[in-house]
Amino acid sequence: MRRALAEAERAAAAGEIPVGAILLGPNGEILGAGHNAREAVADPTGHAEVLAIRQAAAARGDRILTDCTLVVTLEPCVMCAGVILAARIPRVVFGAWDEKAGAVGSVYDLLRDGRLPSPVPEVVAGVCETESVALLRDFFTARR
Image 1 (cartoon, rainbow, N blue to C red):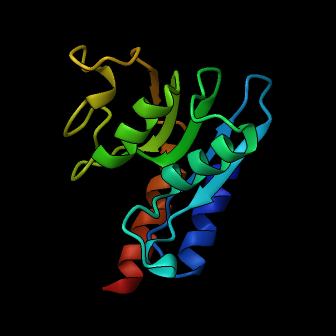
Image 2: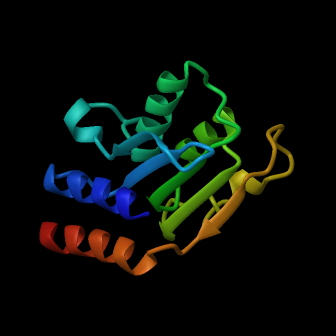
């Protein structure tokens, strides 16, 4: 999570909402890393999770990441939850809950929706939550 927090700090420094993500392989190696870059790349899909997953899939040469863990500073949104399911990532660890757009247990719970065809990923919430919330709070306080 410390590496994901560092990615979130990079996003904040670039004027992006401070969310960072890393994708870990089965031995804990970092396969992909990303931070929000929607403004920088003028792309609505430029979320930290999507960028980290794209990088890992490219590194692996495979869109299926069944032995990986996604670590992200903020609860994934609906779009990111869909990408997680499409990549068949079995474990998601996140820091702060997103009470406005979260799709992994707060507003929605897409990852654990048994109606979807993908295996149900394990979800671990609240890891470094205080640090994750502080980054977001400080970013939005400075913008107001």
